[in-house]
Amino acid sequence: MADSTLTRPPRATADRRARRSVSLPTSWRPTTTAVAAVTLGLIVAYAVLVPVFAPDSLTTPQLVDARQSPSPAHPFGTDHSGLDLFVRVAQALRVSLFIAVVCAIGSTVIGVAVGTVAATVGGWVDAVLMRFSDTLNALPHLLLGVVIVAMYRGSLIAIILSIALIHWSAVARIVRSEALTVRSMEYVDATYLSGASRWHVLRRHILPATLGQAAVAVVLLLPHAIWHESTLSFLGLGLPPDQASLGTLLQVSSGEVLLGNWWTLAFPALFLVVTTLAVSGVAGALRDRFAPQAASTVVEQ
Image 1: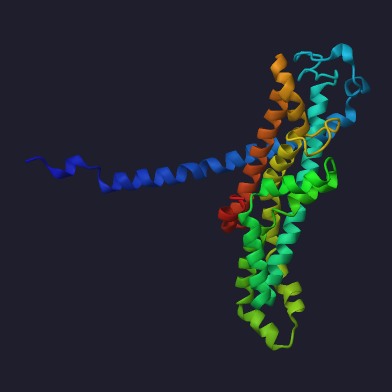
Image 2: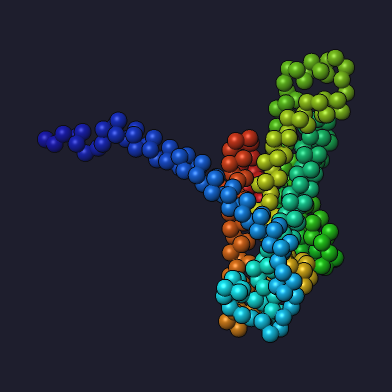
């Protein structure tokens, strides 16, 4: 009779395999985070410095240089107006990153305000705010953005508002959960018993406890804001074509690709994807460090 122990690995071996399968991704995480942080730093430096130091000959339309493929003189080639795409992509990145940062901060401020007020006041105020948040979260965000921007086409303020006003609901949920935890603490009960008002408790105890969640939410919302701005501009509802952003470059390049000018699409799309991945890598590290419970809520939006 065959020994049944020969047909399955020893328990110690199975345990070692399980530990190895769990610890391996963790060992990669510092390297992945470092690569994402360095990549994001280089992208930001590229977006900020290149347009400042670019010569006028690269920022002025030159029809004689139109639609040139990548070369030493023009590393990313030129567009249909003869503009150097190396500079043009940097200008687009600057605009897209600015819009994304403003939108992420705006959404976070709204979410923190709604979440802390709902948790502090409670009762029907909490119920109304959370039902409104759930309703907003159930609607297609891109469709809402299209409706808002369509009324003020080409307006930078309308783009920022359309993104900021539809992404705060997830932040409100996370902040409310954290605020409810703080409100149940004994020192908060003692503060109420000493005669402190709700505003005092909100300002001195609840709001400071949610700042870590808010900081992580800003970074987590950046990739979503970048993609929403790019999508709106690509659909022709965002910035005008003469104002560089990643979305407008992609919109213009959609017709150029049919003429064989692949570089007009490749480089803006590449920087859109790489920037999103870099921000997501840094955001994931911050989330795991400061607010691990935010993972399953903000990322889904």
